[in-house]
Length: 292
Image 1 (cartoon, rainbow, N blue to C red):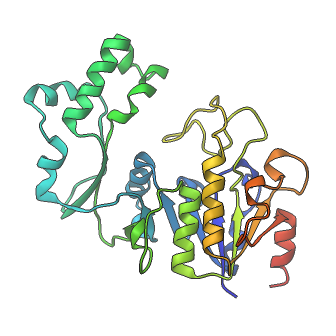
Image 2 (cartoon, helix red, strand yellow):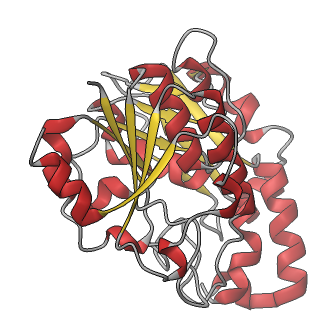
């Protein structure tokens, strides 16, 4: 029996000890899970530029396979053409006032990967923001959230390198453009060909009027006061994953089996052909594990 555990960062998993899963199957994590569990995951996935490069800079890609969106490794001699682009001397001077480039140490790296703007593009964004907000742009206050797209993320590739584009997860692999959670499920189905998949911490919705994520108000995440992310796209993506893998038995592991919004059955998953889904509680999962 091949089992895979897909770990999301919804708040339902906050008090669940994920380490107990390790003996029973491969563990696929999302985004910043490595911060709390640096030795837990067998694979990590991310699709947002800032988060992708945070993971790479942490050194996780030298330890375990990590799958990223639009992850292209570029020869180091191309750096100037790719990053500086059409930047002028004045552009380079102006960018020094801002924390535009986020990168790890270059060292002897023969390749790099990048997401975000070019220097000339970043300066254009910053000039516009400065016209609107004046000196507040450099103070780190809420106004600076409007210029997050000005960042240039660079990862200098280090050996051993276990970073991959999502499309490299298996023969015929594709990047469906999904969110990180469903994308991690896609990579897992391609790499592991499991019989069972357990979704833990993939809450989809929130029990409150604010965002449901363990890492809210930390780097590369929205702040605590944000409204919940609409779940529609996530639900459609998970359903498509299930429909495309009818032989896999999916288990959505909720904190409890009660009427709280996060624990309710998902309407989009009901009566769908090819959706082999069962809801269980965390306690029921632990009970099942005691019998494996």
